[in-house]
Length: 100
Image 1 (tube, rainbow, N blue to C red):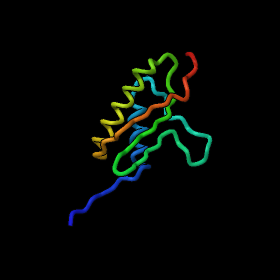
Image 2: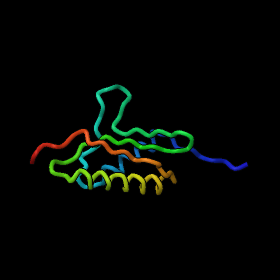
Image 3: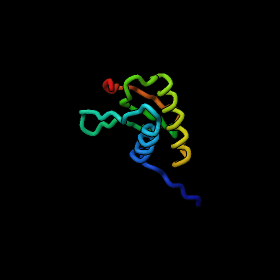
Image 4: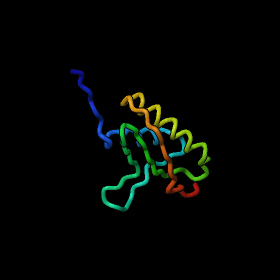
């Protein structure tokens, strides 16, 4: 009998948040005022993994490029750290930092 390990959605969400924060221009993950809701959500449905990130970014950051960079970084990170291939990585910019 072959055993398989599973990684919780909470751990995958932490990995995704860590990966997103490594991208230049990302200030952090947006926090929701609603209880139990964070700025990263990982949903697994029939083996497919979907990642939703809500981010705060620096003023003047090129948002389309930053969003693509976050998607690539999150995919690479989840593959390396957890051997998970997300089907989608959705990035929503909720906050833009103030001017310097």
